[in-house]
Length: 240
Image (cartoon, rainbow, N blue to C red; front, top):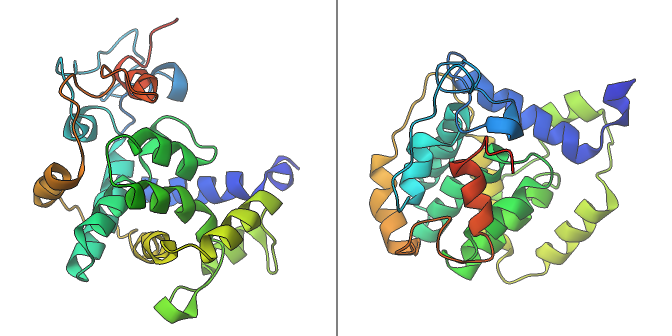
């Protein structure tokens, strides 16, 4: 069966996406273009509808408002809100706020992609945590109350073993000085699927301002090694 051929990462990502969609069922994908099927905020194909234009020098806030998928935004806001309410440091809150931005662009290895997207603009500890949260979510840590998600048992079956590269990433991260930074993303990720809870971005604007180095040229136009990733969201339906 096709489901049985999927890797652990593909199934985990499918589960997480399904859970995020439950947060905002009426919403449709934005900024998706050729990458996600070409749907606009109205639900029409790009040939029939239009994406809202981005400002000439877009900020990460503009991407939250104009390009990131609504259910993904809701999930990340809930994660960051949970971290903030529980007194986490601002850098941890920022990591929770940004940890799933790559699913607006690609599903595979979303932790690695998201970390790379933000690496030039955030403290190294933040991008490191985002990169490694993807592997850590498969492995419990009783010291912070993180158990293996029961939903993973439902999807993968009892005793499921993640792919070797995921286990290797976890073991490496477990010995790292910033291990707990990534672990706390999984802690707040676990409690961030609450239908009917709709936090706003406004409480995090100052956190972004203090810890996200906005390029003066705008994301996508600053000549950084990851500018093309942001441009792919700005111009999702460009054929070439």
